[in-house]
Length: 502
Image 1 (cartoon, rainbow, N blue to C red):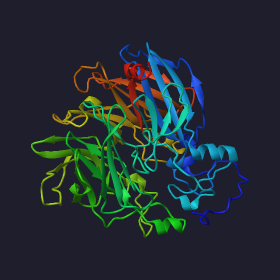
Image 2 (cartoon, rainbow, N blue to C red):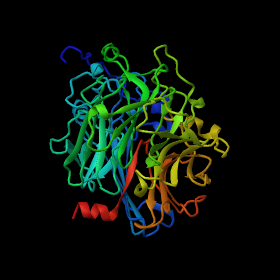
Image 3 (cartoon, rainbow, N blue to C red):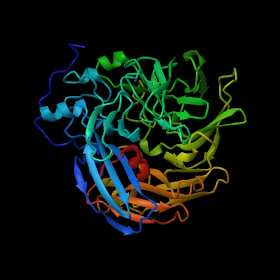
């Protein structure tokens, strides 16, 4: 790789640029530390006992790349420990190789998003570990889909190091959306571009509860495209390909890793979950579209059903097509669809999906106890322009990033009953999580929790909503600071953490 690095740029200006993704609420937070006993309005039920982990892209240093996308920042992990009605907050950066070397150099060294050819130095592993955090086998894993995860201590948030499952990890990449089987407790995973940038290789693998690999399957993608999320059922895995494609020659010329391709189908790869070979994968096709995060998937009547939001436009508008075409971000919407797939069919063109909800939605969650089987309830971020958001007041403060969401939705997919939680006219919500009221309670009965941006106070809040009274908050937890928009997070029950760390 010698010879492709750019010369280290001069960096006299130590201010973040005035682009939207570095302004207003999106101005980098860069906080590490803890705050005990956060202010609480309302009452947090005693049954809510555990830790909410989330991660945000949060650059520690001013980038040298012009107009750097917002999620190219360093992974900064937050932990909200909730016990006995009290909330304690802790936050620490993931000490990736990139983070450590840039802190030593006191300047940015990594270049464009997922383009090593624009770096000022050579990295062994250049990930930012900034997309998702989850606990598996007693370890907190900070994930980004371009590299193995980083292991962290779930209590202290100290970085342990790059995590390769005791040398078992076969892929150079690891999904930011592994799935934990609620029955077998397996961690079901994959990596795309699994043999390096621009490769067609996908590696699917499954890890048993004791940390030992039980399945490893190599397969070939029809195009080198982004596979951000995937779906798992009892017997199948499904890979939705986003038509953002990679070309290494473009990267070598200093271009972007991703480029939207409006001329290829929306592919859904279907592979048997167990005892499969790479040749067993079947690639089904639908018209060009942008698939969002998976709600859930399940088997019924010999067919696979996968629910996910789908947009007819390029949601990642900052990576336009080859001609530079990109949609107006204000015109991008994603509606909830259900695709039905016969995995044994010789016909690879999928029938039109069923629209489950004509509301602009994303960042979906189900009751994780119903993951991989037929579900009834789902929760998600919602953009509803009729709810009374004070756009003139908050517009200059919002900053850039994903399209904002001003409410949380709850849909019963069987009755189609739909309800909304609106946190206020100067508030936007981040990804929700679901906490069951009790371990053996009914599906969807419990609490929804989400970090909320309060643009009036320019600070962050944690809202907790009882699913039995979805219109108002059960409790609001106030932070004395502003946390930048994050991507994903997960709830870990206090009993599970105690079991993992006796």
